[in-house]
Structures are given as C-alpha cells and as structure tokens.
Image (tube, rainbow, N blue to C red; front, top):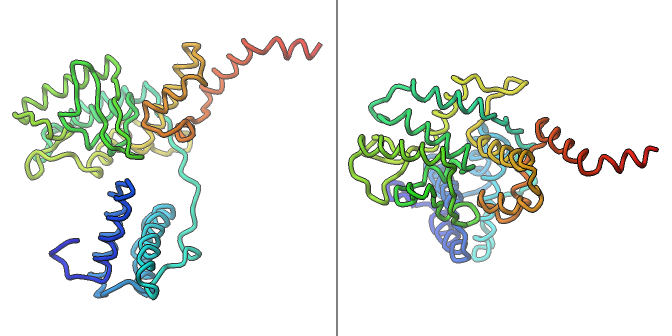
Length: 325
C-alpha cells in the first residue's frame, strides 16, 4: 500500500486477497489498481474502514464512468469483501443487487485500410513536443502494430526493445491477458515500419537497453508512453483522418483490434481459404484461449456478408436451383 498515506482497515485484507489470488496464478494488476483506488478514497473521505455509507460515497465518486466500468469495479471490491469475510464474519459486503446495471457494449467502428493510410499520413505532420520528440514516429508505429498485428493497447505499451526481433520481424508479447505469452510475426511492410522507427528511436534516445520501452517519450527520462497518452494521440489521428461511421461515431483505440480481426477474416475469404480451419490460427495469433473469444471480434459487416454469400453461391447454389425445379 501507499506508505505516504495513513493506514486503513483495508490495507491488510487487500494484501492477503492479492497474495491469495496470485498464488492461484492470477496476475490481478488491474484489480490491484482498483483496490488501491478504493483504499485511497477511504483516506480522502476520512474513513478508517469500508461500510455501507463509505461504499455509497465511493459509488457516487464513480458516477462519471460508464455503467459497465462501474459494475466491474464494484464486483472487484465485493470479491475482496467476500474473501475478507472468511476471517472477519462481521465485515461489510456490498449487495450486488444495487450495483450498476450492465449495458450492451458499444459496437466498434471498423476501420478500413484506406482510412488507416490517411492516419499514417497524418503522423508526418505531428509536431514533436518537449516531452515527446518522437511523437509522430511513436504514433505511426503504434497504429501499425495495433492494426496489422492486432495487439491490445496495453500489449503495445509494455513492449520493450528486448521483445523485438527486428531482423526476423517478430514481436514477443509477454504475460498478457489470460497470462499467455506469444510470438507475433509481422507482415513485411510492418517490419519495415518497425526498422524505420528503431532507427529514429536510436538517433533520439541513444542507448538501447533490452528493458527500455519500445514506445517511449522523454517525460521524466525516457519512459513508456502512458495508456492515456496513446489513446489521445490515436484519437486525434482518427479525427484528422476524418474516420467515422454512418452515425458519426469515431473509432476507439481498441476498435483497431476489432478491425484487424475483420480484415484477417476478409483476407481468408478473398484467398478462398477454409475459414473454419483457420480460425484457431487467428485465435492463437490474437492471444485468445479459444475461438469463442475470437468470435467476439468477427463482425458481420457488408463486405464480409457479400464474400460469404458469394462463396455459398459457388459451393451450394446448385442445390438451391435443383430444389426449386
């Protein structure tokens, strides 16, 4: 816990809870951040421990967040309280009946290759800043990795120089979601983008420690880009490239991963591959445990619908014609 803040009644329960979960093989980095936030909220609220009144105030503090985000954080705190109750039967446990109601997730905006080309062109016009002298180069490579390799935002941000085999064009993603590591081969054009960025980075940053961040800025020394910094930068590129759907919605950074999956499926249809047999390969490339997770990213856009219909007509259209006679 943060030693600069006073102790609270949650400090030890949080420590034991995280230790228990990690002993079971779970990472729980995000959960730790949420629980640290709860603990710091207690201090700011002048409370020693969690009770119904403090919990309600904390929930009100989360009000600006989306309903699904609020619910996810409430469930994390409830899981901590249930674990704590094993040794403290009188501790407060929030009732999930009063949590934020889950809402349908926002449909992604699928980004087309031509639109990404406009985004990449926009990066050359981005001026460097005192904290980010490589701003244009960093955002250009980030878009390339997110769109052509389907990386998650956090995976791209955690990449170090030691994770990069530029000669082979392979990126090593370490201990990501589901605690899985994987090797991600890059396309030839993405490899060229990587090599170009590494030359620019070497000229600006000097040394190349294996543990140094790939996507870096100069804030307080050469540090990795933050999630907010990358999100804001890519969102600005979406705006400059004029990318939006029919309803006027701009994409989010994570929509690039959705777009990667859709484009991969489109290429399978265009190359006349057996789509079903290739889905496990796509799941492995994206770091999924099974194709059930991958299916979440495979949206049936008009282009895919037309390709699937054409294939069906070629393979089975004669059966329909014979039935109709």
